[in-house]
Image 1 (cartoon, rainbow, N blue to C red):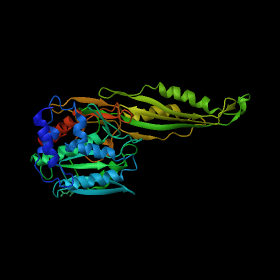
Image 2 (cartoon, protein in one colour):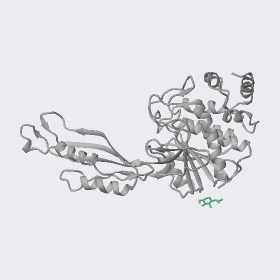
Image 3 (cartoon, rainbow, N blue to C red):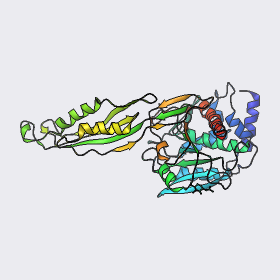
Image 4 (cartoon, rainbow, N blue to C red):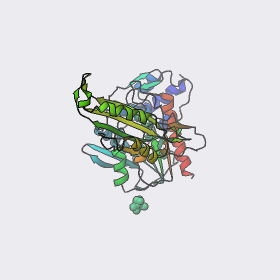
Length: 393
Ligand SMILES: *[C@@H]1O[C@H](CO)[C@@H](O)[C@H](O)[C@H]1NC(C)=O
């Protein structure tokens, strides 16, 4: 490690007090976002443990507060205080008992050109924070507390540097992305705000998401009649009806997209029957189709298989349109994604929507969830660049 880095690090310790943090010399923020020394992360543990960098400190604090969907209260309280102490105007929006969204901006102008957003909930189980070489491990490392922390620091950094002013940008942090999208939908229905551009934070390997597939999720349920398996003619086998239907669904010729690839079928769960010697009275399959294109056609094709089959419960389901995003920004690479986000839940007219963040979806939701420290720091530069690009549009 270079001596100068050590000295700057020590300065940061002195300058950094999360409770008295605004306005201050932006040195510590610059360090957080402009860090590119080659040996920067050979001793990551020192930086994290000693809390030298506000980005790493914020990321760690957010990760250490468990916030599995439905239990976001503590992390929301922490974040609210952090943003207030950073000098921002902070509104909270009630979603459900002990669940609220956070909307923060500088000054008094609520409507801003750009909204920068992440979700504060994570999937179970909670996995504690740890540092492993150049990786930061634990639940939320990349989904979604890495993007969240980077967005906050990027926003404050831009303000400190005078690159954004009142009305240019705001921060929106929502609950409930991981199961229902209730937080983002509540925000788009109830905040009474308009934006022109939105930046969503999710792990995209610091590339701009080209888009992501939509979904058609549904159950196929068959109500048959039990009988002794020696006398199948006395019963109605739910599995004999269900299995061919599933086979047909697997073999549907579903719409493709040049951009997002094929639509894919996952028969995620099957429940049926009680024993080998009983004709099954009941069968159910839970299916999700990731829809690359033409959601209506996907739904129609499924209905051609299940409708009018005797003993099958009429199929309903949950749908989300595929999302096509804006990804052509100088200096940014792009990436195609297969996972769902809060993008479709922000139901307001927008000129452009971007999806960007550190880390990869390949480890999100897994026991191995982590983010490379360098990617986390680089994403601050990315978010800043994106906002600056948007301001030129
Ligand atoms: C902010 O946007 C909302 C929703 O479009 C609009 O009703 C309101 O008048 C705007 N406020 C200002 C100050 O422009």
